[in-house]
Length: 455
Image 1 (cartoon, rainbow, N blue to C red):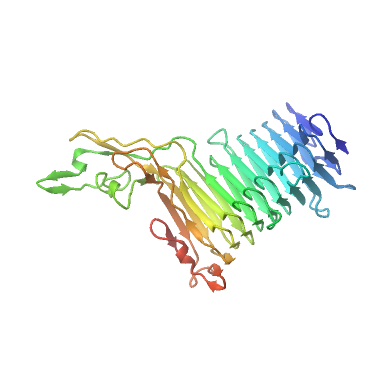
Image 2: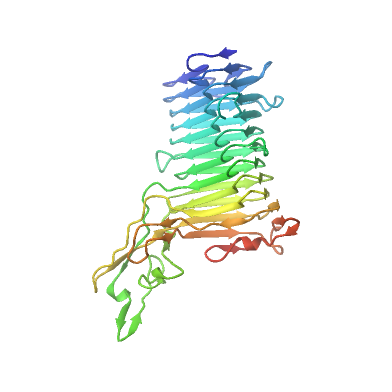
Protein backbone atom coordinates (compact mmCIF):
# COMPACT_ATOMS: atom_id res chain seq x y z
CA UNK A 1 0.00 0.00 0.00
CA UNK A 2 1.20 3.47 -0.94
CA UNK A 3 -0.84 6.03 0.95
CA UNK A 4 -1.12 9.78 1.51
CA UNK A 5 2.21 11.13 0.29
CA UNK A 6 2.60 14.88 -0.15
CA UNK A 7 2.21 14.87 -3.95
CA UNK A 8 2.21 11.63 -5.98
CA UNK A 9 2.12 8.04 -4.92
CA UNK A 10 4.62 6.90 -7.58
CA UNK A 11 6.53 9.22 -9.94
CA UNK A 12 8.62 7.93 -12.84
CA UNK A 13 10.44 10.30 -15.20
CA UNK A 14 12.77 9.41 -18.07
CA UNK A 15 15.12 11.97 -19.63
CA UNK A 16 17.91 12.21 -22.24
CA UNK A 17 18.25 8.75 -23.82
CA UNK A 18 17.42 6.78 -20.69
CA UNK A 19 14.83 4.05 -20.53
CA UNK A 20 12.46 2.61 -17.94
CA UNK A 21 11.71 -0.91 -19.01
CA UNK A 22 13.68 -2.79 -21.66
CA UNK A 23 14.02 -0.39 -24.62
CA UNK A 24 13.06 -3.13 -27.06
CA UNK A 25 10.25 -5.26 -25.63
CA UNK A 26 9.89 -5.64 -21.86
CA UNK A 27 8.04 -3.11 -19.70
CA UNK A 28 8.55 -2.36 -16.06
CA UNK A 29 5.62 -3.72 -14.03
CA UNK A 30 3.63 -2.12 -11.23
CA UNK A 31 1.94 -5.22 -9.87
CA UNK A 32 -0.90 -5.47 -7.34
CA UNK A 33 -0.48 -2.10 -5.63
CA UNK A 34 -3.01 -0.14 -3.59
CA UNK A 35 -2.31 3.55 -4.15
CA UNK A 36 -4.58 5.90 -2.22
CA UNK A 37 -5.18 9.40 -0.82
CA UNK A 38 -2.69 11.55 -2.68
CA UNK A 39 -5.01 14.53 -2.63
CA UNK A 40 -2.46 16.97 -4.13
CA UNK A 41 -1.21 14.72 -6.91
CA UNK A 42 -1.63 11.50 -8.84
CA UNK A 43 -1.65 7.95 -7.70
CA UNK A 44 0.86 7.24 -10.49
CA UNK A 45 2.68 9.95 -12.48
CA UNK A 46 4.58 8.85 -15.62
CA UNK A 47 6.69 11.34 -17.59
CA UNK A 48 8.61 10.67 -20.82
CA UNK A 49 11.00 13.49 -21.83
CA UNK A 50 13.73 14.10 -24.43
CA UNK A 51 14.62 11.00 -26.49
CA UNK A 52 13.93 8.54 -23.68
CA UNK A 53 11.85 5.37 -23.53
CA UNK A 54 9.17 4.61 -20.94
CA UNK A 55 7.40 1.23 -20.91
CA UNK A 56 5.10 0.42 -17.97
CA UNK A 57 2.43 -2.18 -17.24
CA UNK A 58 0.03 -1.49 -14.37
CA UNK A 59 -1.59 -4.83 -13.56
CA UNK A 60 -2.73 -7.11 -10.74
CA UNK A 61 -0.86 -10.17 -9.48
CA UNK A 62 -1.63 -11.79 -6.16
CA UNK A 63 -3.46 -8.63 -5.11
CA UNK A 64 -5.77 -6.45 -7.16
CA UNK A 65 -4.48 -3.04 -8.19
CA UNK A 66 -6.59 -0.25 -6.67
CA UNK A 67 -5.93 3.44 -7.38
CA UNK A 68 -8.31 5.53 -5.29
CA UNK A 69 -8.80 8.83 -3.49
CA UNK A 70 -6.11 10.79 -5.33
CA UNK A 71 -6.35 14.09 -7.21
CA UNK A 72 -5.88 12.04 -10.42
CA UNK A 73 -5.63 8.30 -10.70
CA UNK A 74 -2.91 8.01 -13.36
CA UNK A 75 -1.28 10.98 -15.14
CA UNK A 76 0.76 10.27 -18.28
CA UNK A 77 2.88 13.00 -19.86
CA UNK A 78 4.37 12.07 -23.24
CA UNK A 79 6.57 15.10 -23.89
CA UNK A 80 9.66 13.78 -25.65
CA UNK A 81 10.67 12.38 -29.00
CA UNK A 82 11.28 8.83 -27.82
CA UNK A 83 8.86 5.97 -27.23
CA UNK A 84 6.25 5.48 -24.56
CA UNK A 85 3.77 2.69 -23.86
CA UNK A 86 1.56 2.44 -20.81
CA UNK A 87 -0.72 -0.57 -20.40
CA UNK A 88 -3.36 -0.48 -17.66
CA UNK A 89 -4.89 -3.89 -16.92
CA UNK A 90 -4.03 -7.44 -17.97
CA UNK A 91 -6.63 -9.09 -20.23
CA UNK A 92 -5.54 -12.50 -18.95
CA UNK A 93 -6.65 -11.85 -15.36
CA UNK A 94 -10.21 -12.05 -13.98
CA UNK A 95 -12.35 -8.94 -14.45
CA UNK A 96 -11.64 -6.33 -13.28
CA UNK A 97 -7.89 -6.50 -13.23
CA UNK A 98 -7.51 -2.84 -12.19
CA UNK A 99 -9.93 -0.50 -10.40
CA UNK A 100 -9.49 3.28 -10.60
CA UNK A 101 -12.09 5.06 -8.47
CA UNK A 102 -12.94 8.06 -6.29
CA UNK A 103 -10.23 10.35 -7.67
CA UNK A 104 -11.10 14.06 -7.61
CA UNK A 105 -10.14 15.06 -11.15
CA UNK A 106 -9.64 12.30 -13.76
CA UNK A 107 -9.19 8.56 -13.51
CA UNK A 108 -6.61 8.61 -16.33
CA UNK A 109 -5.13 11.82 -17.75
CA UNK A 110 -3.09 11.50 -20.96
CA UNK A 111 -1.14 14.55 -22.14
CA UNK A 112 0.74 14.21 -25.42
CA UNK A 113 2.88 17.16 -26.48
CA UNK A 114 5.72 15.04 -27.79
CA UNK A 115 6.99 13.87 -31.15
CA UNK A 116 7.67 10.19 -30.60
CA UNK A 117 5.64 6.99 -30.80
CA UNK A 118 3.20 6.70 -27.93
CA UNK A 119 0.64 4.08 -26.95
CA UNK A 120 -1.91 3.96 -24.15
CA UNK A 121 -3.72 0.66 -23.59
CA UNK A 122 -6.58 0.28 -21.10
CA UNK A 123 -7.88 -3.26 -20.78
CA UNK A 124 -9.96 -5.22 -18.27
CA UNK A 125 -10.33 -2.16 -16.05
CA UNK A 126 -13.11 -0.37 -14.16
CA UNK A 127 -12.96 3.41 -14.07
CA UNK A 128 -15.64 4.95 -11.89
CA UNK A 129 -16.21 8.50 -10.71
CA UNK A 130 -18.33 7.79 -7.62
CA UNK A 131 -16.90 9.35 -4.47
CA UNK A 132 -17.92 8.83 -0.86
CA UNK A 133 -17.47 12.55 -0.15
CA UNK A 134 -17.64 15.48 -2.58
CA UNK A 135 -18.90 15.49 -6.14
CA UNK A 136 -18.14 12.90 -8.78
CA UNK A 137 -14.73 12.79 -10.47
CA UNK A 138 -14.46 14.89 -13.64
CA UNK A 139 -13.55 12.57 -16.55
CA UNK A 140 -12.84 8.89 -16.89
CA UNK A 141 -10.14 9.26 -19.56
CA UNK A 142 -9.01 12.80 -20.36
CA UNK A 143 -6.91 13.08 -23.55
CA UNK A 144 -5.04 16.26 -24.45
CA UNK A 145 -3.12 15.86 -27.69
CA UNK A 146 -1.15 19.00 -28.58
CA UNK A 147 2.01 17.45 -30.00
CA UNK A 148 3.33 15.84 -33.16
CA UNK A 149 3.58 12.20 -32.12
CA UNK A 150 2.21 9.05 -33.70
CA UNK A 151 -0.19 8.07 -30.91
CA UNK A 152 -2.67 5.26 -30.38
CA UNK A 153 -5.15 4.79 -27.55
CA UNK A 154 -6.97 1.48 -27.19
CA UNK A 155 -9.67 0.89 -24.58
CA UNK A 156 -10.89 -2.72 -24.44
CA UNK A 157 -13.23 -4.73 -22.18
CA UNK A 158 -13.52 -1.91 -19.65
CA UNK A 159 -16.25 0.08 -17.86
CA UNK A 160 -16.18 3.88 -17.64
CA UNK A 161 -19.09 5.33 -15.69
CA UNK A 162 -20.37 7.66 -12.95
CA UNK A 163 -18.10 10.57 -13.84
CA UNK A 164 -19.34 14.11 -13.33
CA UNK A 165 -18.33 15.22 -16.82
CA UNK A 166 -17.40 12.89 -19.70
CA UNK A 167 -16.62 9.22 -19.72
CA UNK A 168 -13.94 9.98 -22.32
CA UNK A 169 -12.90 13.53 -23.23
CA UNK A 170 -10.56 14.20 -26.17
CA UNK A 171 -8.89 17.39 -27.40
CA UNK A 172 -6.86 16.89 -30.58
CA UNK A 173 -4.92 20.03 -31.57
CA UNK A 174 -1.47 19.16 -32.88
CA UNK A 175 1.26 21.76 -32.70
CA UNK A 176 2.40 21.23 -36.30
CA UNK A 177 -0.33 21.27 -38.93
CA UNK A 178 1.58 18.78 -41.07
CA UNK A 179 2.77 16.23 -38.49
CA UNK A 180 1.04 14.09 -35.88
CA UNK A 181 -1.64 11.41 -35.69
CA UNK A 182 -3.99 9.95 -33.12
CA UNK A 183 -5.96 6.75 -33.59
CA UNK A 184 -8.32 5.94 -30.71
CA UNK A 185 -10.43 2.78 -30.51
CA UNK A 186 -12.96 1.78 -27.85
CA UNK A 187 -13.68 -1.95 -28.12
CA UNK A 188 -16.27 -4.04 -26.23
CA UNK A 189 -16.43 -1.48 -23.44
CA UNK A 190 -19.26 0.29 -21.57
CA UNK A 191 -19.15 4.08 -21.36
CA UNK A 192 -22.14 4.72 -19.16
CA UNK A 193 -24.29 1.70 -18.32
CA UNK A 194 -27.90 2.52 -17.48
CA UNK A 195 -30.22 5.07 -15.86
CA UNK A 196 -28.43 4.65 -12.53
CA UNK A 197 -24.80 4.38 -13.68
CA UNK A 198 -23.98 7.07 -16.22
CA UNK A 199 -21.68 9.99 -16.94
CA UNK A 200 -22.86 13.52 -16.15
CA UNK A 201 -22.12 14.96 -19.58
CA UNK A 202 -21.17 12.97 -22.72
CA UNK A 203 -20.08 9.40 -23.05
CA UNK A 204 -17.33 10.23 -25.56
CA UNK A 205 -16.73 13.94 -26.25
CA UNK A 206 -14.28 14.61 -29.10
CA UNK A 207 -13.01 18.03 -30.21
CA UNK A 208 -10.76 17.94 -33.31
CA UNK A 209 -8.88 21.02 -34.52
CA UNK A 210 -6.35 19.47 -36.94
CA UNK A 211 -6.03 16.59 -39.36
CA UNK A 212 -4.70 13.14 -38.61
CA UNK A 213 -7.21 11.93 -36.00
CA UNK A 214 -9.54 8.96 -36.24
CA UNK A 215 -11.94 7.44 -33.71
CA UNK A 216 -13.66 4.05 -33.65
CA UNK A 217 -16.22 2.34 -31.46
CA UNK A 218 -16.05 -1.40 -32.08
CA UNK A 219 -18.84 -3.20 -30.24
CA UNK A 220 -18.94 -0.74 -27.33
CA UNK A 221 -21.98 0.66 -25.53
CA UNK A 222 -22.71 4.30 -24.79
CA UNK A 223 -25.84 4.14 -22.66
CA UNK A 224 -27.60 6.49 -20.26
CA UNK A 225 -25.16 9.40 -20.41
CA UNK A 226 -26.74 12.67 -19.34
CA UNK A 227 -26.12 14.53 -22.62
CA UNK A 228 -24.76 12.79 -25.77
CA UNK A 229 -23.58 9.23 -26.23
CA UNK A 230 -20.87 10.25 -28.73
CA UNK A 231 -20.15 13.84 -29.77
CA UNK A 232 -17.72 14.78 -32.54
CA UNK A 233 -16.87 18.44 -33.21
CA UNK A 234 -14.49 19.44 -36.00
CA UNK A 235 -13.39 23.06 -35.66
CA UNK A 236 -10.95 24.91 -37.93
CA UNK A 237 -8.69 27.21 -35.97
CA UNK A 238 -7.48 29.75 -38.54
CA UNK A 239 -9.52 32.09 -40.69
CA UNK A 240 -10.54 30.24 -43.79
CA UNK A 241 -12.23 32.67 -46.14
CA UNK A 242 -13.97 31.22 -49.12
CA UNK A 243 -12.65 31.66 -52.61
CA UNK A 244 -12.65 35.21 -53.90
CA UNK A 245 -14.70 35.84 -57.03
CA UNK A 246 -14.00 38.94 -59.07
CA UNK A 247 -16.97 40.21 -61.05
CA UNK A 248 -16.02 42.52 -63.87
CA UNK A 249 -18.59 45.08 -65.00
CA UNK A 250 -19.51 42.79 -67.88
CA UNK A 251 -20.30 40.03 -65.38
CA UNK A 252 -22.54 42.12 -63.16
CA UNK A 253 -26.28 42.58 -63.46
CA UNK A 254 -26.65 45.58 -65.78
CA UNK A 255 -29.89 47.15 -66.90
CA UNK A 256 -29.66 47.68 -70.68
CA UNK A 257 -32.82 49.11 -72.17
CA UNK A 258 -34.89 47.54 -69.42
CA UNK A 259 -33.31 44.07 -69.75
CA UNK A 260 -31.06 42.45 -67.13
CA UNK A 261 -27.85 40.92 -68.40
CA UNK A 262 -27.14 37.95 -66.10
CA UNK A 263 -23.64 36.54 -66.46
CA UNK A 264 -23.30 33.77 -63.88
CA UNK A 265 -19.85 33.24 -62.36
CA UNK A 266 -18.21 31.57 -59.36
CA UNK A 267 -14.79 30.38 -58.34
CA UNK A 268 -15.06 27.02 -60.10
CA UNK A 269 -18.32 26.94 -62.03
CA UNK A 270 -20.06 29.72 -64.00
CA UNK A 271 -23.46 29.23 -62.31
CA UNK A 272 -23.69 31.94 -59.67
CA UNK A 273 -24.74 35.54 -59.93
CA UNK A 274 -23.83 37.79 -57.00
CA UNK A 275 -26.49 40.44 -57.51
CA UNK A 276 -29.35 37.98 -57.84
CA UNK A 277 -28.71 34.46 -56.57
CA UNK A 278 -26.72 35.50 -53.48
CA UNK A 279 -29.74 37.34 -52.10
CA UNK A 280 -32.43 34.76 -52.81
CA UNK A 281 -32.88 31.01 -52.29
CA UNK A 282 -31.08 28.68 -52.67
CA UNK A 283 -28.32 30.94 -51.31
CA UNK A 284 -25.44 29.38 -53.27
CA UNK A 285 -22.61 31.20 -51.57
CA UNK A 286 -20.95 28.11 -50.14
CA UNK A 287 -17.44 27.14 -51.24
CA UNK A 288 -16.48 23.51 -50.62
CA UNK A 289 -13.01 23.97 -52.11
CA UNK A 290 -11.59 25.40 -48.87
CA UNK A 291 -10.96 22.61 -46.35
CA UNK A 292 -8.60 22.89 -43.39
CA UNK A 293 -8.60 19.21 -42.39
CA UNK A 294 -10.48 15.91 -42.42
CA UNK A 295 -11.28 13.66 -39.45
CA UNK A 296 -13.14 10.37 -39.11
CA UNK A 297 -15.50 8.52 -36.78
CA UNK A 298 -16.66 4.91 -37.11
CA UNK A 299 -19.35 3.28 -34.94
CA UNK A 300 -19.28 -0.38 -35.89
CA UNK A 301 -19.98 -4.04 -35.18
CA UNK A 302 -22.62 -4.20 -32.49
CA UNK A 303 -22.04 -0.84 -30.86
CA UNK A 304 -25.04 0.33 -28.82
CA UNK A 305 -25.85 4.04 -28.41
CA UNK A 306 -29.08 4.10 -26.41
CA UNK A 307 -31.05 6.14 -23.87
CA UNK A 308 -28.72 9.11 -23.62
CA UNK A 309 -30.18 12.34 -22.28
CA UNK A 310 -29.94 14.36 -25.49
CA UNK A 311 -28.54 12.74 -28.66
CA UNK A 312 -27.12 9.34 -29.42
CA UNK A 313 -24.47 10.51 -31.90
CA UNK A 314 -24.01 14.26 -32.38
CA UNK A 315 -21.97 15.47 -35.34
CA UNK A 316 -21.03 19.16 -35.30
CA UNK A 317 -19.36 19.77 -38.64
CA UNK A 318 -17.33 22.96 -38.68
CA UNK A 319 -17.04 25.17 -41.73
CA UNK A 320 -13.76 24.47 -43.57
CA UNK A 321 -13.66 20.91 -42.16
CA UNK A 322 -14.66 17.47 -43.41
CA UNK A 323 -16.01 14.59 -41.34
CA UNK A 324 -15.97 11.05 -42.74
CA UNK A 325 -18.42 9.10 -40.59
CA UNK A 326 -19.40 5.44 -40.83
CA UNK A 327 -22.31 4.15 -38.73
CA UNK A 328 -22.70 0.43 -39.39
CA UNK A 329 -24.04 -2.64 -37.65
CA UNK A 330 -25.04 -0.69 -34.53
CA UNK A 331 -28.13 0.03 -32.43
CA UNK A 332 -29.33 3.63 -32.06
CA UNK A 333 -32.44 3.75 -29.91
CA UNK A 334 -34.35 5.70 -27.31
CA UNK A 335 -32.17 8.80 -27.03
CA UNK A 336 -34.22 11.67 -25.65
CA UNK A 337 -33.95 14.24 -28.46
CA UNK A 338 -32.62 12.36 -31.48
CA UNK A 339 -30.57 9.28 -32.21
CA UNK A 340 -28.35 10.93 -34.82
CA UNK A 341 -28.02 14.72 -34.71
CA UNK A 342 -26.14 16.61 -37.43
CA UNK A 343 -25.43 20.33 -37.46
CA UNK A 344 -23.18 22.60 -39.53
CA UNK A 345 -21.34 25.01 -37.22
CA UNK A 346 -19.06 28.01 -37.62
CA UNK A 347 -15.37 27.33 -37.14
CA UNK A 348 -12.39 29.54 -37.64
CA UNK A 349 -12.84 33.29 -37.70
CA UNK A 350 -15.61 35.23 -39.40
CA UNK A 351 -15.07 35.40 -43.12
CA UNK A 352 -14.10 38.61 -44.89
CA UNK A 353 -16.96 40.61 -46.36
CA UNK A 354 -17.51 41.11 -50.06
CA UNK A 355 -16.92 44.48 -51.67
CA UNK A 356 -19.40 46.36 -53.84
CA UNK A 357 -17.28 48.73 -55.89
CA UNK A 358 -18.41 51.77 -57.82
CA UNK A 359 -20.38 51.33 -61.01
CA UNK A 360 -18.28 50.03 -63.91
CA UNK A 361 -15.66 48.71 -61.45
CA UNK A 362 -14.88 45.14 -60.42
CA UNK A 363 -16.93 43.76 -57.53
CA UNK A 364 -15.42 41.25 -55.10
CA UNK A 365 -17.51 38.36 -53.76
CA UNK A 366 -16.08 36.20 -50.96
CA UNK A 367 -17.74 32.79 -50.85
CA UNK A 368 -18.41 31.28 -47.41
CA UNK A 369 -16.56 28.11 -46.35
CA UNK A 370 -18.79 25.05 -46.11
CA UNK A 371 -19.16 22.17 -43.68
CA UNK A 372 -18.46 18.83 -45.40
CA UNK A 373 -19.86 15.50 -44.22
CA UNK A 374 -19.59 12.09 -45.84
CA UNK A 375 -21.91 9.77 -43.90
CA UNK A 376 -22.17 6.05 -44.58
CA UNK A 377 -25.28 4.91 -42.73
CA UNK A 378 -25.64 1.14 -42.88
CA UNK A 379 -24.15 -0.59 -45.93
CA UNK A 380 -22.86 -4.17 -45.46
CA UNK A 381 -23.70 -4.11 -41.75
CA UNK A 382 -27.16 -2.53 -41.32
CA UNK A 383 -28.12 -0.50 -38.28
CA UNK A 384 -31.08 -1.29 -36.06
CA UNK A 385 -33.22 0.63 -33.64
CA UNK A 386 -36.36 0.12 -31.57
CA UNK A 387 -38.40 3.20 -30.57
CA UNK A 388 -35.90 5.15 -32.62
CA UNK A 389 -36.52 8.87 -32.33
CA UNK A 390 -35.07 10.30 -35.51
CA UNK A 391 -32.04 11.27 -37.48
CA UNK A 392 -32.09 15.05 -37.45
CA UNK A 393 -30.35 17.60 -39.65
CA UNK A 394 -30.51 20.69 -37.48
CA UNK A 395 -30.47 24.31 -38.64
CA UNK A 396 -26.97 25.56 -39.15
CA UNK A 397 -25.22 28.22 -37.18
CA UNK A 398 -25.12 31.53 -39.03
CA UNK A 399 -22.38 33.90 -40.11
CA UNK A 400 -23.29 37.21 -38.51
CA UNK A 401 -20.91 39.57 -40.31
CA UNK A 402 -22.70 41.92 -42.69
CA UNK A 403 -22.06 41.41 -46.37
CA UNK A 404 -23.21 43.67 -49.16
CA UNK A 405 -24.20 40.74 -51.37
CA UNK A 406 -24.88 37.90 -48.96
CA UNK A 407 -26.64 39.60 -46.05
CA UNK A 408 -25.86 39.46 -42.35
CA UNK A 409 -27.39 36.18 -41.14
CA UNK A 410 -26.23 33.45 -43.49
CA UNK A 411 -26.39 29.80 -42.42
CA UNK A 412 -23.29 27.66 -42.75
CA UNK A 413 -23.91 25.63 -45.88
CA UNK A 414 -23.52 21.87 -45.46
CA UNK A 415 -22.09 19.83 -48.31
CA UNK A 416 -23.47 16.54 -46.96
CA UNK A 417 -23.39 13.24 -48.80
CA UNK A 418 -25.34 10.47 -47.06
CA UNK A 419 -25.14 6.93 -48.38
CA UNK A 420 -27.81 4.48 -47.22
CA UNK A 421 -28.32 0.89 -48.36
CA UNK A 422 -31.08 -0.28 -50.66
CA UNK A 423 -32.89 -3.62 -50.70
CA UNK A 424 -32.19 -4.97 -54.18
CA UNK A 425 -29.57 -4.76 -55.45
CA UNK A 426 -27.04 -3.92 -52.81
CA UNK A 427 -26.46 -4.41 -49.11
CA UNK A 428 -29.28 -5.07 -46.60
CA UNK A 429 -31.31 -2.10 -45.37
CA UNK A 430 -31.20 -0.64 -41.89
CA UNK A 431 -34.00 -1.91 -39.65
CA UNK A 432 -35.68 0.82 -37.64
CA UNK A 433 -39.05 0.66 -35.89
CA UNK A 434 -41.16 3.07 -33.90
CA UNK A 435 -43.36 1.26 -31.37
CA UNK A 436 -43.26 -1.80 -33.56
CA UNK A 437 -43.99 -0.05 -36.88
CA UNK A 438 -41.23 -0.08 -39.51
CA UNK A 439 -39.70 3.27 -40.46
CA UNK A 440 -38.66 4.20 -43.99
CA UNK A 441 -35.18 5.49 -43.33
CA UNK A 442 -35.17 7.66 -46.45
CA UNK A 443 -37.35 10.17 -44.57
CA UNK A 444 -34.30 10.87 -42.42
CA UNK A 445 -32.46 12.52 -45.29
CA UNK A 446 -34.28 15.62 -46.53
CA UNK A 447 -33.39 17.11 -49.88
CA UNK A 448 -32.26 19.90 -50.24
CA UNK A 449 -29.70 20.66 -49.01
CA UNK A 450 -28.81 17.10 -47.96
CA UNK A 451 -29.17 14.16 -50.32
CA UNK A 452 -29.65 10.50 -49.62
CA UNK A 453 -27.65 8.54 -52.16
CA UNK A 454 -28.56 4.91 -52.65
CA UNK A 455 -25.80 2.68 -54.07
